[in-house]
Length: 387
Image 1 (cartoon, rainbow, N blue to C red):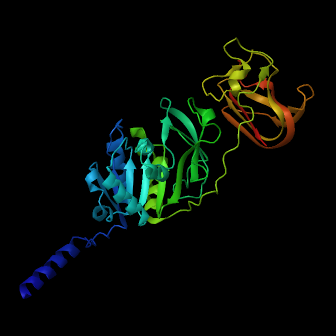
Image 2 (image 1 turned 90 degrees about the horizontal axis):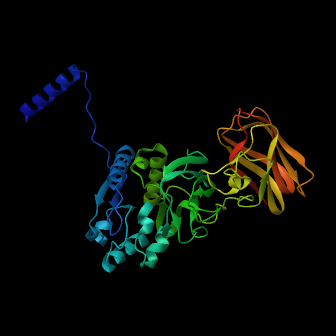
Image 3 (image 1 turned 45 degrees about the horizontal axis):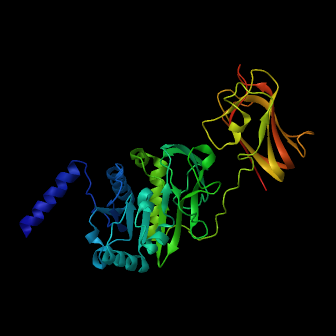
């Protein structure tokens, strides 16, 4: 015993002499999660990247992560070891009836569920799961950049995200709109990409209490690149914390749907067009690849008939490289007599989101008085919002 004490004392002297400090034992993890990524249909090549990302999140945030594609792990005893199960781009029928019952009982006992992307393309014949995930997958267009709009910036999953978050992914359309049954965290702005079918209200991330447990789902996460994005990783971390620990308010009915674009596909006319390929209707068709373009002179205008009288409070313009440096937003009850409600000077193109308007009108016109380039006026998007 004396010899051991001398050795310990000698080791302490050596450590101190080297300027080192003893390293404390690692703290026990706050909780554990299981990543489940079995596929019985399409298999996403981002699954391994997603598992790695979740493991990294766990290492940085003091929770442990296990990953499996073995449905036999869905037993009462095994599931009880985890605070949440993350269904990472699962597809098709992945659990048998006994395993489904085990998972239902796990959630009813307070367990958490996180669904990522194709988790909505899973278990179509299991009605309980359909309620858990919130909505089933219907279709998707090609991978492209779109604007995600944050509906609730106070939730840990969305804190710090830009209100209008532009990113590339595969954007799901769903068989039903889950709003009313879930707490919507983000929506898709269908005017910023092609192929959306849900209209002005297109939820794509949501959460809710469900059958004794907690559920979080995001439609994002198709691409490998998603899992290296800080914003998406933070969204995923917030979802895991909600499902596992209940951190965040997911009360249903507190996130109203986004306003409708009153100009969408309504009759639009213009003072001129560069040629027949760039009609005024291109600016109100919700596509970010089609545009109205005028002749190369001043002044020029484009107007839209809203089809009835509305109180307009916002006009959003997305310019092509040829933009309006000086222009006026004008309103009219009849398309003949115009009133200027906003004058813009010194604009530099890009997105002009004109808010704080208050005009009762049927017609809205953009009247350009000075081009920002040697070309004409060119608008990808002309949106009008109000009541």
